[in-house]
Length: 91
Image (cartoon, rainbow, N blue to C red; front, top):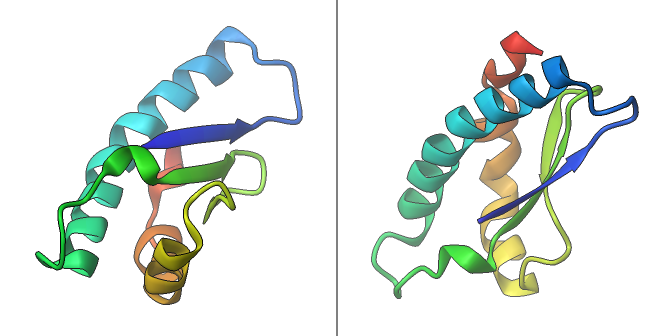
């Protein structure tokens, strides 16, 4: 699982801490979400998943670097499950 951090300001030390804290909260939540979406269909290769994280606008989306069939399978529930949470409360 790879996160692409979209940062419009300088990556100062406090923003770096926000990124680290947010990633520690994102990884388990997204992992749980992905496991629920694929429910044993086939082994999940988490290295195939890419996410763009916009800290300023407080939004996460599935990167186009993720294989298209995976995007199609998870995009319907992703926003509700991941963006509908309060993950950005530290930002």
